[in-house]
Image 1 (cartoon, rainbow, N blue to C red):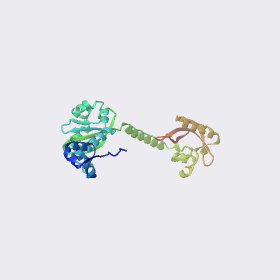
Image 2 (image 1 turned 60 degrees about the horizontal axis):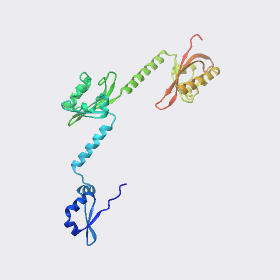
Image 3 (image 1 turned 90 degrees about the vertical axis):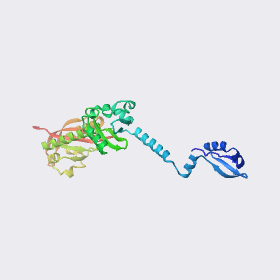
Image 4 (image 1 turned 135 degrees about the horizontal axis):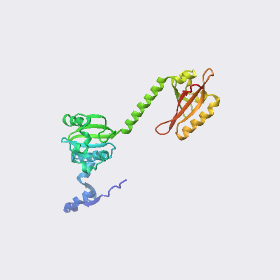
Length: 298
């Protein structure tokens, strides 16, 4: 914590004689003017007085606010490009400079379409026109603005100077959506095939979910199979191999495939192939996925 400044003291007579000097001293720290040896008045700078009084000039507030906003824009991970109404780049933050792969000093003052040639042939070009001409906002994911197969989340914000283009690379997320769609399509084809069972297992090997093909294969109700250890659905001779395969999947993350016999509710065995893969969450293993395919002719 900053220590309080010890004020200087001067008599009223000396203060009057040397006012110019004491005025300068008060700019650095308070000056106490005494009268008959007792503190009577305090001379402080105008800035100190304004701080004490809670008063701030509009220019000081505007400068502080402007500096703060500039600092935030410099620090955020999204790319920000400010353009004027003539499509010239007025300012650009480091994140946007990295996306464009051109130094900020070379971009400021440059024409936007010269800095980003791919802009002219895409949908974003027309949205920027509407932002500048009609102060229309836009937000959306657009591919190929900077590089092929790259997806950018683009936000256009009208400003008095012209507008702000806020960019975020969302290529990884879009690839994740595509993979999720592909997995959903794959599961739909498995369900359409009709006799391939699958189950999601917890880390303790209990069944968290199972499809209709597996429950029909075993002859149990879908609710009854939940929280049951998957090895209990196998013949005694298959359980050890399954336990070892599941342990290997959890330890290494490498999928495994084994031959095993399922046991139905009536005690009939069904020869099948079990394919086991790890279900991995954002931070750790969440369990396993088992695909059960009956072996024909066994």
